[in-house]
Amino acid sequence: MAADYWAGKTVLVTGGLGFIGSHMVEELVGRGAHVLCVYRREKPEVLAELPASPSLTALRIDALDYDALLAVAAAVPRVDAVVNCATLDGNMQFLLEESGRMLDENMRIVSNVLNVARHCRIPDVVLISSAEIYSYDGTEPMREEDDHRRHMEFSPNGYRMSKMFTEVLADLYRKQFGMNIYTPRLTNVYGPRDDFDTTTNHVIPNMLMKLAAGQDIEIWGDGSQLRTFIHVQDVVRAILCMVRSGTCEALNIGTSESVSIRDLAYLVAEAAGHTKNRVRFDPDKPVGAARRALDLDNFHRVVDFTPRSLKEGLLDTVQWHRKKAQRVR
View 1: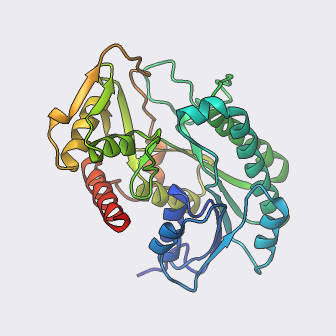
View 2: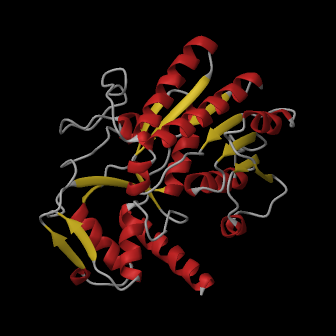
């Protein structure tokens, strides 16, 4: 069997104890890479789930601190890639109240990562982006070229703006410094280690938390709006395929399995061992866009595996959440 592309490489992962970052760390170590896992907040429960390996170095470093981040990268003979998973996000209340801070901190993190990579001559840089950069004003799936170069608009959502400006800065750094910068644009991500806080703004954890608390899942409107979801481990694998391929600077990452919010609620309830009776609707509440979908032609060309089905991924997520709840008890 041929050696994995990542075997023996040194990869710096910022936000390494976060939702996507921790799975990125785990996958890279499993593939034989040496991983510098940089994190801002202590998360002992996440560290406990990561592999105990001499190839993993976990360092508490704030990615907002340029000098500290530079010291980490400069302390090893060579860093082959840096993956920025560090981001300031939050629930809807946080989003509304601190959008300015969100834009400011996220952009300073991206700037630090790019400049450290430039200073240390790191060959590949991954800046996690989001499908939220797109302006969903039509019914057709969004292609990679339907980005800020075609639709650049203001939003009061500081998180969305930070992802848009991340891509703008990536474009300018590619042109000025000749850097290899990849911006994977993720659709809705779910799975183990997602945000299961009681105030979470993530739809699948929110549904599971409602059921776990003995409450019904509440759907705004009739739940007919269509969305796509992808398991976090499939996201990580797709990003690594993207870098290995080296053919796409930006890449939509998702699945072709669209699901209505109504059917999603039914699937979540089923995976958690409940019936459809635990789902109720509030037709007077506002709903989002009728459909959000990504064009995945490039994804299928670059990625060498088929993402798991939503039903399979939900069962995996429920199993992890139950184990976590047992450990807490």
